[in-house]
Image (spheres, rainbow, N blue to C red):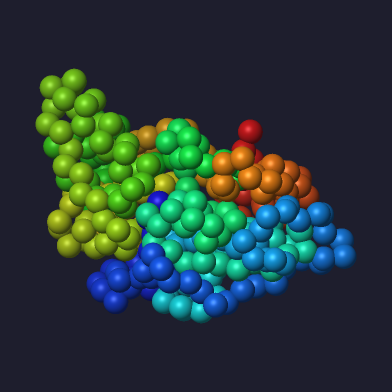
Length: 287
């Protein structure tokens, strides 16, 4: 998943946000959530006693981002839902901030108990970690208004330069598209990967790339923050993937997270969090 802050998207040229947080950075802020007296039993083996520690990359509005642009409390659907998850067990939510490509290594090295950060449940990730579904998603294409109007199906990206966040499933989708274009007798798309979503936005706005690929959850928000410069090309790809909350494979945390998310969905907590973050509440109706 890539990612970008609200401020970075709004001004597009705010290069100071492109450095972001290093893979070794961590946040000292932690939010207490829930009522321990009424909470379900917390899973055993947590990294920090009394806390649910979550790896997160707060540069992916509206899922996770710094409300003030570069530091402080982390806002967004994932951050709020993570707090609700911790609260379900009467725990405190503690965020370990990392770059996107540092999320899975952070989990595996036990810097955190789980990743709540806009990660697709891909086969490659499920081979090395467990995941519980939390949100329906799929890739979207953003481009300048004139170009977006011309992109109606994946093959319309053949021959175009496409920006994507590095190590993301979206980047992998463009890699797959190269073979599809070749089979159709069309030139391959040129994929350029960037560490941060803010950089993919700048690549299109500055003319370095013709389009960018990003999850549909973030795409509309990105376009709204760059009106007149970016527009979503609707329904280019099917909504056929699912975001998950990842935990170490075979850990006691894995089934506990799955059950807790089901409870938070059943009581309407996740839907309300989605609405509060200006998302369609139906995206949490994961089957």
